[in-house]
Amino acid sequence: DVKVTQSSRYLVKRTGEKVFLECVQDMDHENMFWYRQDPGLGLRLIYFSYDVKMKEKGDIPEGYSVSREKKERFSLILESASTNQTSMYLCASSQTSGGPFFGPGTRLTVL
Amino acid sequence: GENVEQHPSTLSVQEGDSAVIKCTYSDSASNYFPWYKQELGKRPQLIIDIRSNVGEKKDQRIAVTLNKTAKHFSLHITETQPEDSAVYFCAANSGGSNYKLTFGKGTLLTVNP
Image (cartoon, rainbow over all chains, first blue to last red; front, side):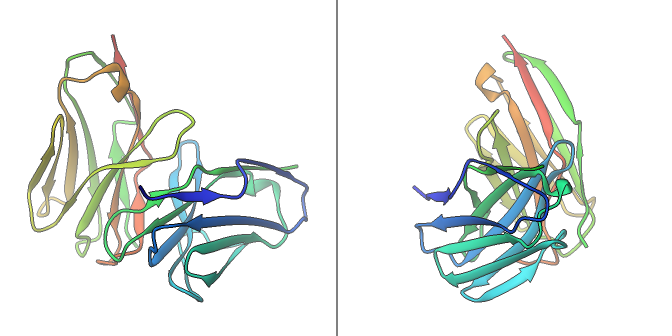
């Protein structure tokens, strides 16, 4: 079974803080993704990575950055958290082709 | 970029009835169309997918159909059960990319016992 884990299920931060969300997958997948999920808006792609140290912007990259130093780990960074970044963040991984497998999600609240 | 429209946003059926969810996409280069099911408080899970070289795919009570000419694809669930109640998302890849999926906004399916 594919296992995608995220460092926190719930996180509360203050406006302006730097926030790190960590994701680890154990299936040697090439691709990793960060999505955010908001009611009525579905799943929107923030960033993805198809190889170590490689990254590409998704549909809503503004205010976020990512890091992939090892194949199994993909981090999402909010340089200066804002209230409009309050959301559910879902990490996912996939093989070269095929749909991504999602982690359990991190519900981030920015006060 | 790719635009995926999903309808209806909510769907309520009686147990044993069929349910159909429809999606349209805009990018003619799209060739991969997965469907995800998300139960309340859980992660989205891939339930079925279809590639552009086939028109229909079935897996027990679920099936997906694809019409590339019209740029639409549909999820069909037969003999619905209460455990089918969830939010369902369709998706399409952008520009033929293996990586970048654009998701629809989701359909909340409620199966009434």
